[in-house]
Length: 133
Image (spheres, rainbow, N blue to C red):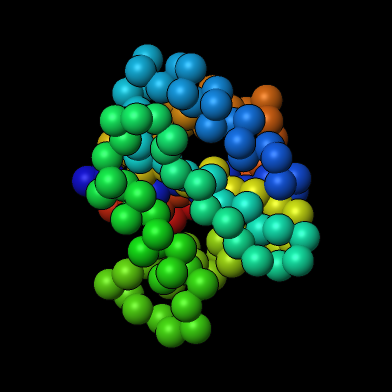
């Protein structure tokens, strides 16, 4: 069962740098390059979602991340769409000027990813079967 990893940064450019690092070392970490996105909270409070940009990117991931963002920002709690505790911890991190790296990945690999990106700093959240940290 996949895990959802969110790493929040206080700067709107850092998540883009972190995702580029993952693209360079993603194969050795066992990551699907399409299973990631960057969410930037602009200075005016609006949010911008960026998904994979390469030519053979799978549309289903772009749709997944779009639905995730919609559920995250929705005023309604829909437990089928996103875990309420995860949502409640991620929303406060979306303040103007911040960015978030989002990953969906196979269970058990989050520690290697977090180590690979540790030099960027940030605050991480992991949601998966039996996990909520």
